[in-house]
Image 1 (cartoon, rainbow, N blue to C red):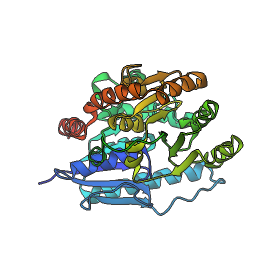
Image 2 (image 1 turned 45 degrees about the vertical axis):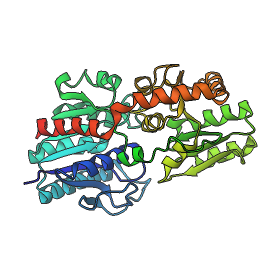
Image 3 (image 1 turned 90 degrees about the vertical axis):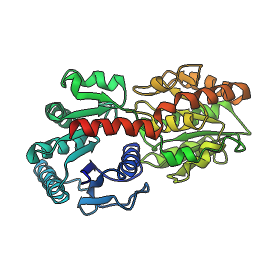
Image 4 (image 1 turned 120 degrees about the vertical axis):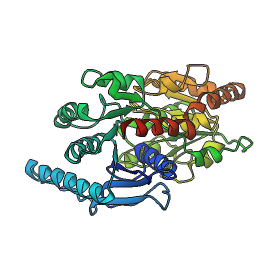
Length: 364
């Protein structure tokens, strides 16, 4: 009999955690009955195997700025109760939570139902946007999980004050197999600097746009793939800098591999990360990469001046100097790209799936 496993996360919108869940679910469904629970009904951005069941707790989320603490508490209780009901209906034998709030729910429901759970933190906890209350709840609840999966040593070290070391394990994010199959080494490269990430403060695309403007690269384009709250602000900045013809905000795309194939340089300017999926993907495609050395992840992917360039976070001069080097040296781009492909082999789906299978067998 196939073991039923349920992933819990807030939504299946575009995002790093969502992509990882979909990639893992699509691969694990060959061996297990996989279902996914989201808090609210919404679109599924990443393609899912038709055998995977998607359940939601409530209809579409409606923001209410007048919501009181009492109403928020009621909402959380309702979501947890609905999750419990769905888990019981699916006869789940293992819960896997992704991201902070779903993780907290997962542990609570796990103790309520006596079903083991694995939780996975996806953002560096020191820099996450959750408020003080939820930080305190996290410290109380997380130690009761069967296992916490993190993506870097730095994040593991953060949790060691509260959770026993044998209950924390490091598993990096996998490169989607379909993405790997989309690599075209002989693709004709264009004068493109590429960035992939949500248009949010965390991703700091403003720094990249300003650096690009200062370099005055007339025959190059900067393409940014992603969507978010800062779109209008970035559009205004692009207009003010006179770069409407050179800097393009593409929004969310499903064919990102096309741009990984044809870009010459990848620039990653985040202020913090859990694990930098887009940077890993760009390196996997053999792009010459420059990244901020933010907490956490880039330094575990890039060995400075060996397979890419690491610069201090928010250092526009270092960013300009690094971009200038990459733009003007075909040899350097080729060397970095070749080394980058080699160094991301450990992130291939088969390797990461094997680690998750070991976790599943150990916990359940």
